[in-house]
Length: 346
Ligand code: FNR
Image (cartoon, rainbow, N blue to C red; front, side, top):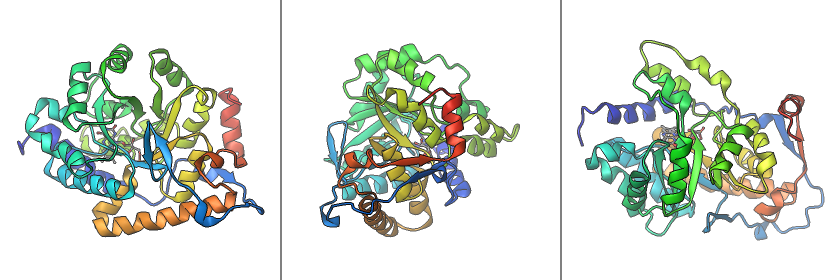
């Protein structure tokens, strides 16, 4: 692997800057949402079923490890651990952007490890919105991916001095949707999506959207730390939080499949996102933090406790399975009611 390559160096910096800025606090607005307890849940805790259908795959939990990394030696280590843990938990795992592989094929093993360490699980490839359908298919083939994520990252690119400046993507995404052999998920990278964006994606045939909202990993902050010319952290002011983005999905929830990510910190965040319409909930910063700060074993224990807490919350709101979470009464605080009103979403 060429050590001096700038793109590879950037991937390494992302890993360590994500950890530098990680906080246990989430800014995704989940604190402004309440679920009500059920005094008569009429269920047996031991019968609670956490499984979900993730694009045809029966995942044991309503969570997945979202896109993080690839390309560097450090990426190989994290992707190996993510794949092993995803395999252990029987949940989907995504690759980081595979653009570096198109340019430097010697980086292939940093991605292949995802499949090697999770041979029968659900593995997701990841490319930019400008990858040609042929390259996107190559990314899928390299790791025998079950789905492909296409990331939308305007704010991130603009905060990078070396970033892209052309954001004409829709036609290319449409062509990827038509020509790539696996389901396509279009995702943000932590700045959220509006209902107008969702309509644009729907118009070109996109069926699966990960709104990846603001509240956790903040690429305006991360890229500003790398950019010695300009501090563009304030660009995150434009972002939609994960909860706001979930409100934006409401008019489309009967037609499209939504995943939620961005600032997921607790089992309560997961349950609230599911209640608001997500079919599964992604995390990047949280799992990366545990792997970087602690160890694989401790991260595994963290998720063991996370699962117990998912069940406890479900029993409290009277949900025997993930579908029943969607029926739980939900209370929004005034700021979110005001948001929905101004955005004309009921
Ligand atoms: C990311 N994310 C990301 N997303 C993507 O589609 N392709 C990528 O290559 C990356 N790279 C990446 C690196 C690192 C270090 C992190 C932490 C994240 C974005 C990620 O998938 C997710 O959308 C956001 O991070 C928001 O979720 P969290 O981190 O708040 O859980």
